[in-house]
Length: 200
Image (tube, rainbow, N blue to C red; front, side):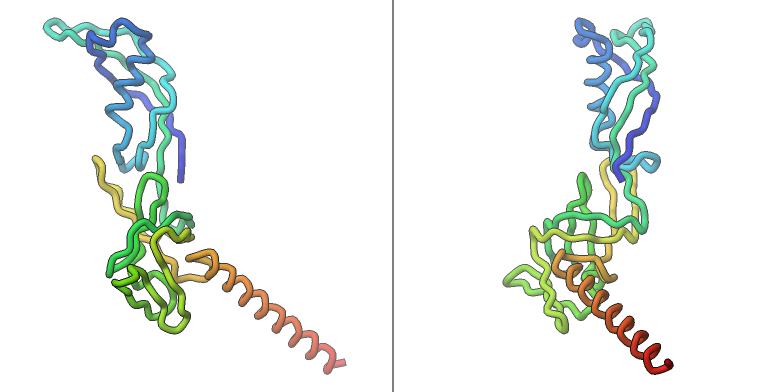
């Protein structure tokens, strides 16, 4: 999900940045150009971590800026389908809930919240499961699985999430799933032991 990439590019350094170290000037320019941008290759670029090299400047007649080849390292957030992520519910609307995952928000559609009939309660601004009584509210910590990634270019991107499967959702839901799975295995082992005992 969070990755480091080393990339190369070209920058223009304006005259007002000439008085300092080239790497500092390059970092200022690169931060403005790259941070907060979404690309298909790298995902969401969080920060320019390091400027590795700045080439000699080229001067073009009639232009006050100097032009440089640069190599630098960026920290990115690149989500992939089927990845399990953890985040915080930041908004609940009638069609689903938005989960904050680092620099991006993902949408859990109402049909993907849990394996139950879910109703939206406008007064309490929350979702409630009809059979299970599961409740999802703003500020809940959840675990979800990415089911769709649509990273455009510029500053827009969409993530589709699900919490319908076992061991996803709020911590309480996950704990209940673990207990249920454990007791199911215990029952199976007891049944096998009893069958082996009767066959002797």
